[in-house]
Figure 1 (cartoon, chains in turn orange, red):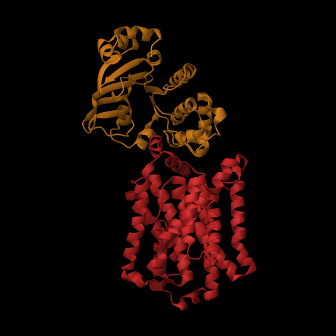
Figure 2 (cartoon, one colour; figure 1 turned 90 degrees about the vertical axis):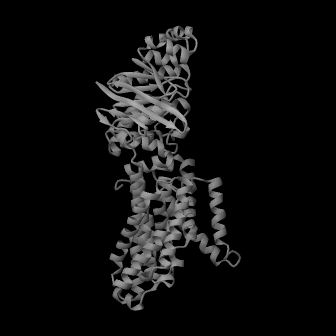
Figure 3 (tube, chains in turn brown, blue; figure 1 turned 90 degrees about the horizontal axis):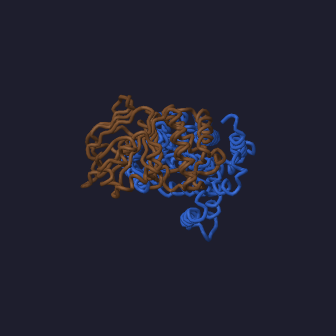
Length: 251
Length: 320
């Protein structure tokens, strides 16, 4: 069963066609990777899914419900949470309060007291429990990335949108983050993730969709994508690179 | 809230200070405390929008003036008693803020701040030309009105008691909001409105509610102030500089904290009292307010309470 269906979504910014009749499906329980060169429209697609932008054309169907053009806070309450590419911590609130915001206003709309319990559990899961009383502004980049994730998780979403959560992390931190993402999937949450770190996304995704100039140019398993001629041509440029990616040396 | 030591401490301090004129029976002290409690109520209610939600409001005083007018009108022209007139005026200003908020809270940052100045000036111009409110000359209470409260002297004490109760309620609401889910949503908006929306905070609704709540109390204070004053006119009711002075109080004490506006209001009132009576500075108190605001923003943007909380984390449980 499909958790999320995107049907022919188009979005323009002035003369720029950011998304051109994009269609894709996310099945319940899978990790779907979304890749493509810079400016391909990946983040715009996220913004359309969670209601920040209203598309000119097309429909977004979430759990058999049309959510096209609804405001972001309604979509959040239906069960879509998001971690940003550029971290957006609520700087003057503590780490715990940041995560409580997710639990309070997310899908389950918890009371302050319940939200505290959920937030503590999630902070334990992402390994930030020791920093719970620290102001979010004082965290380092890797910690802020984990905070983004924790805040999204505390909302108890059905679908998690991850926008380059691995960017800017060192190899150890990437490995830790991948473990966290796997544990999130194991807990039953469906994940749609944008990532530039090729070996990581190739390893963790069940399926991959490739966007280029606002259009879907390929879709398939990581193996299929890595050998897809259009992808190799449009995105990777060098055909031999794909082989290296699958072996886990590229990036 | 009822199990919070910090709340009981706040209540005890305010109540102690507020009751001191009653205990001593001193009318001078009562007049001083009336002004301080009024400023505490104005600053604490402004803080709900400015400190918790992060929206700068230069037009807070419009609710004070308009509330005063509505209450005055009900007492003067329709013979209402002070209590229902006070409540009605507060509800009216809150309703106005609710309606206005749905329109102007779409604006952010400087645009919202500018719109609030516009509202203050527009309402002042409207009231100055509105005959039922007495137009440019305003309205005066007949001295006989005070007889209903047991004479003018008793009426002044009654107004003071009502103000003390109102100040305690305002600070109580400020404390409750700060420690509620509603308040967490407001603070999320203050920190990053777009991120808050994506986290599920119903931005338009909670902002409008915060604006209406912050307008309720100045509306009620306005009635008490002008009842005590005996007359009301547009120039007195909509003093833009009082809005700015209220901002200075909130910033001085510490925006976004419960104690900040209380401390800021008390300190600022003392400072202003000193400047106004000093022969050297008596015409310069607004210049001082401006300079003070500049210094706070440059050097202690968190205000006194904010600085205290950042410098001494141990005090955070008590100093809220």
